[in-house]
Length: 98
Image 1 (cartoon, helix red, strand yellow):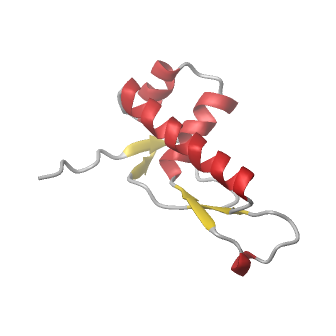
Image 2 (cartoon, rainbow, N blue to C red; image 1 turned 90 degrees about the vertical axis):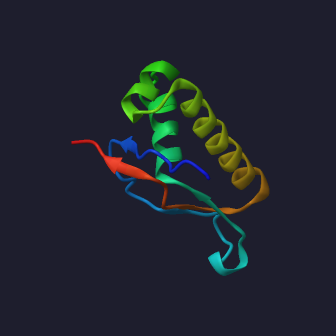
Image 3 (cartoon, rainbow, N blue to C red; image 1 turned 45 degrees about the vertical axis):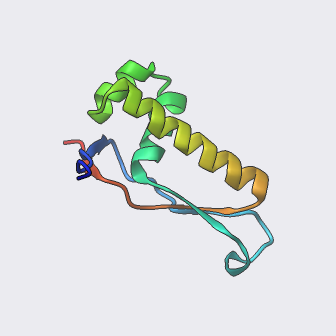
């Protein structure tokens, strides 16, 4: 039996939920989905410039879990940018910080 995912804390919802290459209709693009916890990991690591242990604590996960979330987010963003794909932001097991 698979253990259920523990909700990850996120600071805020992103203001935009779609990004795509300019000049190509969305219907013609393959889409990559970034979850809200992956976006939060990117925000904490690269915009807030936190160390992984600090970022993990803010999200309420272990450092190794944070590393896995961040690695998956980086891979998805690279795939979208280099492959000319759209990025959709949605989903994930998250809860808002109070």
